[in-house]
Length: 124
Image (tube, rainbow, N blue to C red; front, side, top):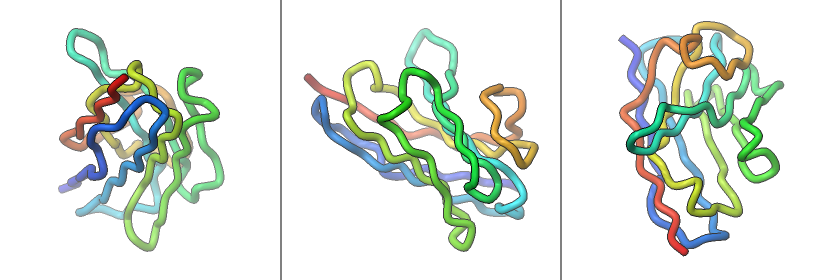
């Protein structure tokens, strides 16, 4: 059984930074790409970033390009999301997800497992 656990969320001021981490248990980690999604109440969950199985390729939503960086450490079964220059529009519940495939995807249905989510709050 695959389990994903996010950590590192919290509250920051506009312009601040956070680094989210997500550990995977229960399955081989390095055969699959990993992604990050976010959701605010009343809206659909949206793609944020993805990193391929070996970390060689990344993909980002236009709204976070140049500010967020996705990476992974396969030795630690962990994926990261470094978030810089945060602004209130970035406030959401963030979810990590394991893809069904090796290569990056922004399509939610390509992901078979999601974590429980972690809250990020950005104040003005």
